[in-house]
Image 1 (spheres, rainbow, N blue to C red):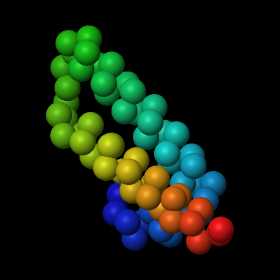
Image 2 (tube, one colour):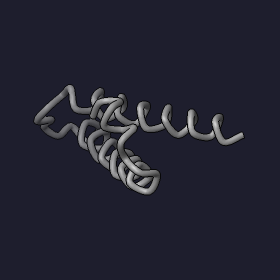
Image 3 (cartoon, helix red, strand yellow):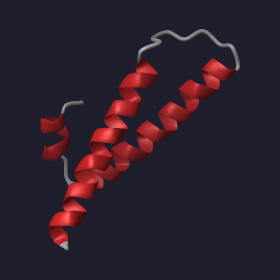
Length: 66
């Protein structure tokens, strides 16, 4: 997910996507900890970056609303 795509999302959609990504990250990390097979080892990094992008946009919105 690119910054352009994140900025186009509505606030509710961003919140929903953030929750989905956090849950997915939790599942991926749990799978790694249990010694399971990881289909895509770079997926955790991608999820973390997407979460950071969403949080960045959220913080920008909060600062502009002050």
